[in-house]
View 1: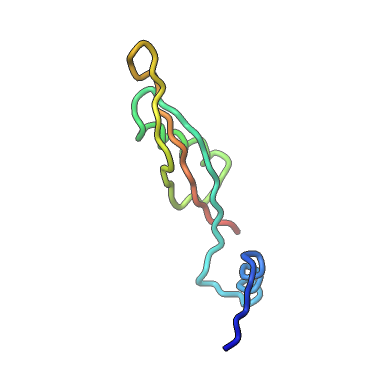
View 2: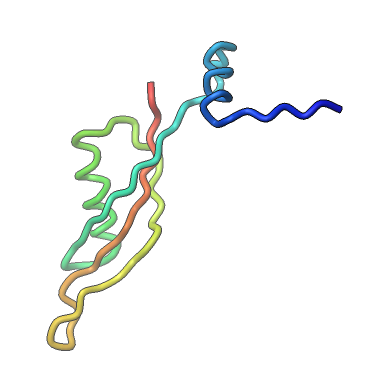
Length: 88
């Protein structure tokens, strides 16, 4: 048995050279957003803002949620969102 170790970059280059059209190259970026209404609205704000400069967004993963509290009340909902989009 032979084990071949490829780095992530080597594997992507291999796939490009093989011209596999059934595989897409995806990239993930992390966005922080907030809202005064809800976490859902904060997530929508992240996608809306990112879509102004990033095309082909395929998914959003909410990694973290938190709130800002002022005078005993929630003043802002915050999310850290990982957005996945297709490259090329």
